Length: 464
Length: 101
Image (cartoon, rainbow over all chains, first blue to last red; front, side, top):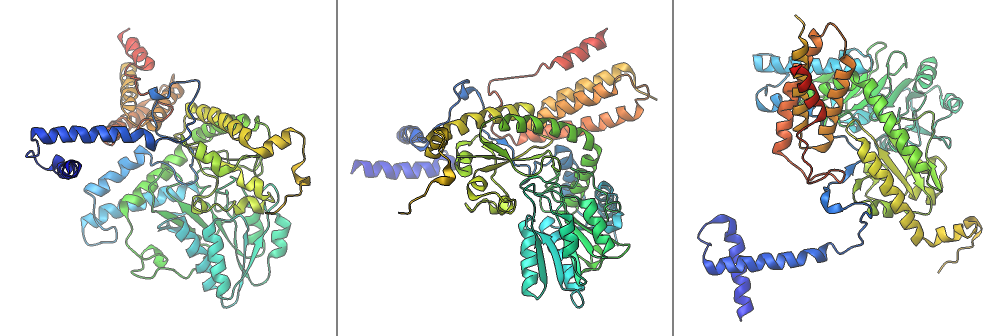
């Protein structure tokens, strides 16, 4: 009887606790106190899992928020970018396409400034930049748009096996529409063979799509050479530069790029905005995915979002201005991380070391499950591959394309370093990885066998 | 008219102080590093008109944004000490002392 009454009072009091002062009767305060005691008792059981506490420092004196090392997925918004965006969310709310009043003019002026900043990074004309909702939309517009426009005479598209999912999926979609697609293989270093590319180009090839920097392994494709080949054979060249824009030197004229996909949230800009570069001379024609009011040269209808566009523009201006500083800083941290991780036994650096963007380090730790290492590294925000595929436990298709076996593909981890990563964080990550890889390997029977000198490939695994 | 040595040092000190106000560890460290680097590179350059003007603009941005950062605080990072208070930065003290002389 009594416990029932107590729980009823408890329920009622918790509802009234924040609502009114009427609940402040002495008896109920006592109940409240009881409730907080039971809550406090509950807590430790929730945290009762294996704890990887540091032996060399007192964790209670440090914060709990994990270190962010997943800059390929997204980057934090730079405060200077946010400062540029805020006026558009507070006072400058005009529609940039309204040409009849000053509210429209003032936002339109800023949007055009942003367009110029975005274009300057890749040495393009501002009129060649089309704002979209992100790199995925850019890739879709570019690939489907060009293929459909020239579809009457040309039915062939060339891409690579290591492209981002949105490029591969767009191509698969076009295959259903009757197009033929060649998926170029890559070498063990992640680079495509230029001779093979030239051989794959046919008379009815309309588009070559190769990404500049890979999102999982950070390998840089020889964009300039590919551009030259495409120009020679009069084929349009599209490149997915979501990871490359502002991080490696790009010049659309020098590299003969016809279409380029750009994303804002990879360069410390806001999410939900990207840009597609479409060459004007010689003109590249596309069939738009979104039809409507004819904004953005009719290629992407719909009202622009001035806060996002101007944030993107400011992010582009900053990344151009601080290119050298960022490059030197990220390079320094990256080589420190790479050297320390590779000093561990049985580790492997994935992808080419020379043609490589420093901000993306992909390392395989043999005899350790990548996912279990990620679970053990609760204090570091990392990923084993692209964020789009991280929900599944499938090994990375990119590493598969490189010729890595399942075991190696499963044990890989990607480290993303950016402008806001500090040296102290890198030091922490290095020691945490060393500690936990050693710990997990000690649990592993495979590692024990390797230590005893047994070659794992000679074992006949019995099925049960 | 270019800014005097006192004005530049004052700006340096203010920038460091404002950067220090960031609640977010990564932003704080970034702006401290950037300010130190910019002023180190600039040391000894005669024509500082543009640099000073840019610096004042930067100071406005950092002051506003560090305030916003304080309005939306998050948990401390695992590399950050919870009990640490760093209101006295060696560079700022140095800059202030230099100004007195």
